[in-house]
Length: 441
Image 1: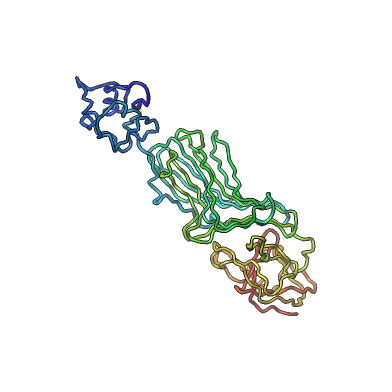
Image 2: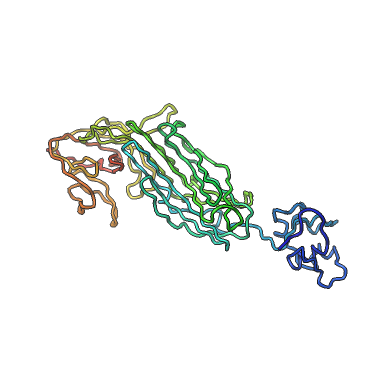
């Protein structure tokens, strides 16, 4: 209903109508022969909406509910008063944070043909006019669109005049190797008549960084249910992109490693920093969004030419990884390994190589591009759990593509401090044992 005008002439009769009928234009004094201005301002005629009545963005009086009792009074202090106005707020989630499932911020894509590798997380928000909204999240890669997982509902009260969104990263760790084709980006797709936006957080030629913050500018996303031109269902993303046409390859990664670190999407109402809700990664789980692109060398037909990620120190005295042949690894080198075999959300670790030697074998298995002997354990996961399994003991070989290759070969055995390490092959990253007794034939 019409409120008290924010400009021009206003009158006592209209203010009386706004208080009693929520309609300034009614100009109805309900039998009162002489409306008392004093009774208007002290609440005799009707209870004044002191909490929200002047919170309407059209308020030009400078008045607030806290000082309506102060005298002297004037008509101008009622400009913009809206008796039915309700301030916007986010009653839930408690504390202004909504936490996504931890797995939704763990995404990895590997391409070994030098093509684009993309790993990311996407948040979908659906706004409803009744104040009950839906928050969903999914991880995705270049080869998979992913599946949304409902993060839960969140609510609001009142109707905002404007909603805005921005991405924030708190104490993020960035691994960047390559040129501008490698990047970490955040994206906004409000839909409706509001255009999509993509923002570079970090490029490959910016190099690595640890405990680094990023805060984007707020961008208008007001959905149609709140009177805006955006869609009622909107998507927002953070992704890593890597592309390399040369060996050893490129990587773009954003990760967190402590409970106070997070990646999150903030939604702000009415340009008021006290009215925000943040959809973020979990309190006790880490972010690990990782894209790796490399071109497999043409000589990867024998086992020593399988690839591992070796640790180097760059010009900024920071650790970076480069893919090298297993046959070129020496004792004392550090190679990348899974952080915790039973918790994939734990950040990868640098494993020291404690043993490197060759042994002669008659043939080996090609397991989806991984060239490995029959007795070398691989860490496999199925619906029953995870365990070390030798290639020869895989109980459902039909679900795993494998081919036996005959002929004398000299595979390499690496021993590592945690007892395992990563091997890269055919767009995949395998965890293999670095703590077993290889057979010599």
